[in-house]
Image (tube, rainbow, N blue to C red; front, side, top):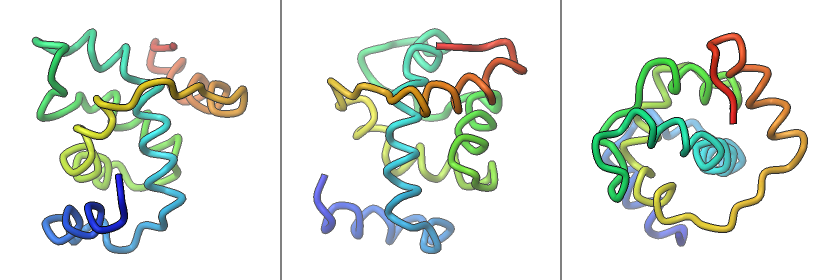
Length: 109
């Protein structure tokens, strides 16, 4: 995804204007880690769901240290990018962070 595409998406999501690129990158990576859980809750796995559950929203918000209200906006804007991403290998730190926030909610990857 190029910066022009990101800018075009953000026009429709003013709640995301304050985010740093680092947070967007983290969201994309942690969403990729959570993809199995997202797919488990989805009706069709070939296309990203329009929304993700509050449980997943809370995990992602905690992982990127953002307000949970930001996550549905991020998902809406970048779900296609998450679904197209392949070959992302999570770091040990990312896995620890994801599990630290996911395990209390009885989820893990």
